[in-house]
Length: 38
Image (cartoon, rainbow, N blue to C red; front, top):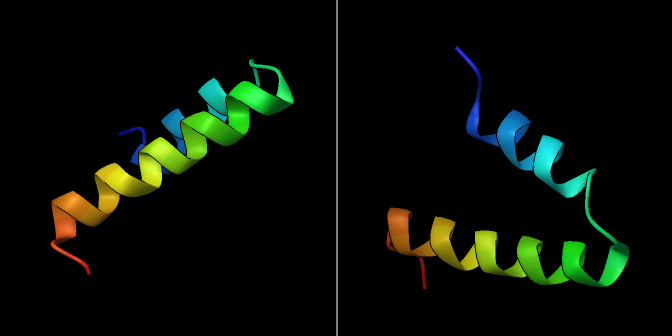
């Protein structure tokens, strides 16, 4: 089974730095929502 992190890493490695930062921030927000973190 492919982990969520591996999927993110594969995506992140294939996009330019600025888009990478935006995608990473967005993924962090999604994780916060998933785990109901402040």
